[in-house]
Length: 156
Image (tube, rainbow, N blue to C red):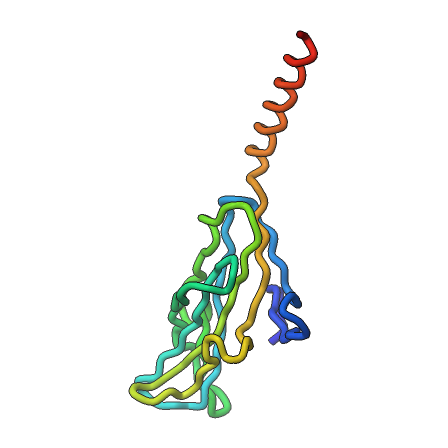
């Protein structure tokens, strides 16, 4: 649904096609949440958002539980915020560089899967590129140090 938040789209035209690039300073974080809809599946259904951040599409996924929000028009709605949950902050520990955020949703009622956008499903996970830049104060320290070094070398 259209919202004020950045959305992923399905641009899978190449391995380097990312519809969303997020640039953050080192130490900053990204707030992650989501919404999922399932057919009214009855008591015991759970819904999750699974994500991973890596420089090379490797590693394990981390689950975020999507709380139940409402049933409308025969569908159960699960929503991080509207269901009473809170957004998950990710990315604060990343060092400068380029990373990839992969996301998929899953919902199930044990033992049968109700809905699943499988991890690694022919590369159809939602993906975004995250670019982490050095913290501005760190850049300033490097520039100051270089300027001092240059000044001292000229005085000799």
